Image (tube, rainbow, N blue to C red; front, side, top):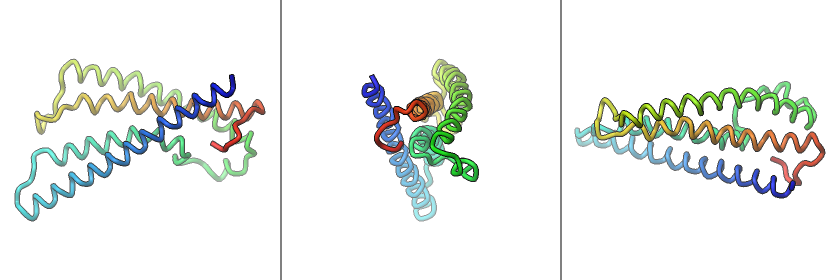
Amino acid sequence: MIQTLLRFLNLIDALSLWTGRLAAWLTLLAVLILTAEVVRRYFFNAPTQWAHEVSTLLFGLLYVLAGAYALKEKAHVGVDVFYSRLSRKGQAWFNLLGFVFLTLFAGTLVVYGWKFFLASWQNREFSLANQAIPIFPFKLAIPLGAALLLLQGLANAIRDLLLLLGKEEDRAH
């Protein structure tokens, strides 16, 4: 049973790693778009109608997709002054308390982000500045990113519970 649970947790970690890598590639794409726009604008006097908005949407997309990866890698800002002085079990309790708040935050984002996306989808929302750019796919990233964050938070919380129960994994998480 524990081995199956650990495989599931590792699958969640792999998903978070994959979305983190996707976010890295989206960063590169956005930077390339902006660089091309600067070259076109200042060297050829031929700016595009879409580059700024698409790069802004891509940066927003990578922001919400990278959250789960950052949680997996423990890259979010924390109060290390107190946390580092706690025992591993104390840290696990602290993490579980944080998971409660994460659940409230990410759960709210999933619910309201989904409603936000559905309204955009039903109206076939496009950019006001450029009607060729659909907005609704980018709005889907809000509940998706929050769900990924919640899933990684759950994986971390289960690992903390296993630690508290004396059934922790062989590797550090």
